[in-house]
Length: 370
Image 1 (tube, rainbow, N blue to C red):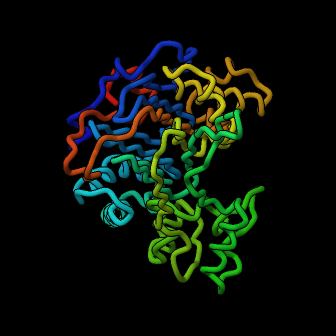
Image 2 (tube, rainbow, N blue to C red; image 1 turned 90 degrees about the vertical axis):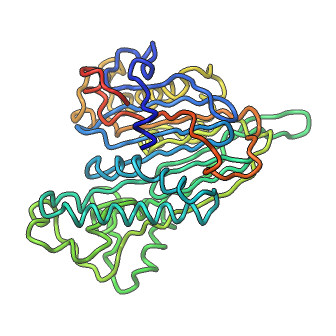
Image 3 (cartoon, rainbow, N blue to C red; image 1 turned 45 degrees about the vertical axis):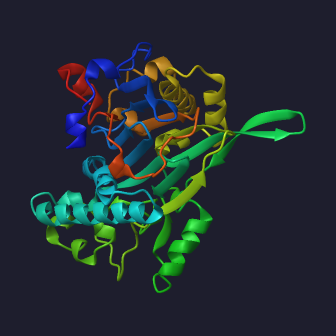
């Protein structure tokens, strides 16, 4: 498949200056159809649950950030399949993207049905899914969950100008009161569909995001009550799905005032505000900018726990999760409009792809491929 044909060698993925953090992987700078991009990921979980990817051609760019939870299976499945579903439809539109999300959800459900008796915990595995696609000067942003896309754009007032942050994606997290109201309105007969537990709001006391790929135990009632699943999680009675895979989709015409885009998993936004991230990108050199954002988030995570950043970098995966989540960051600079006149992906040969690794430490040791 595309990823296998265009696997990016490990020695090209690692840059200098990662500060000695063995769990940090990055590509400092590569070209895409309308500028440059940078990508980085740091692992915190025992198994890396984040996945990220960038596909480029001469006239189109595709970005994906998939923030897994409960395990890596859903995020890896999305990375292997979602772009192919978009590509096969031969166009780029809201309808195409929505169908690709639907197909990914259905195919993952089929995987769960085939494997859950042998691996019952897969019914509680899911992933947020953030997608950006650019062609013909048009940007599409589709989102499930609480990964986030933020635009840095120039605004002018009189003789002065500044660069501001504009959030392009919608967070689907029940910590937001509006999202809680949305979920409650869909379940008027279930007063416990969203509950406050362990200091945060959660759907059925389990999960914070209301939309995802996977999480079959909260979408298909037949999966929650089996004796095998009871070994791995608390059965949660419900009459209808309490989560969906319906993406929020934004379509935007790019213009010269749009300077750069940041796509990142929730691990970054837990530590840094939209405005802080845009300010760092604006004031920093391009090369290594994604790595620089990850490191800024790690410094903030260390500060919150009253420890030193240098000490945090020496903590192993798994234990590291007590300080921060997996973090994936992709920064795209927008230097000139995309040149496609059709916006059809089937007319675009994929010239290059960069895919984040499935486990960072094993890549360092085994010298595998991302």
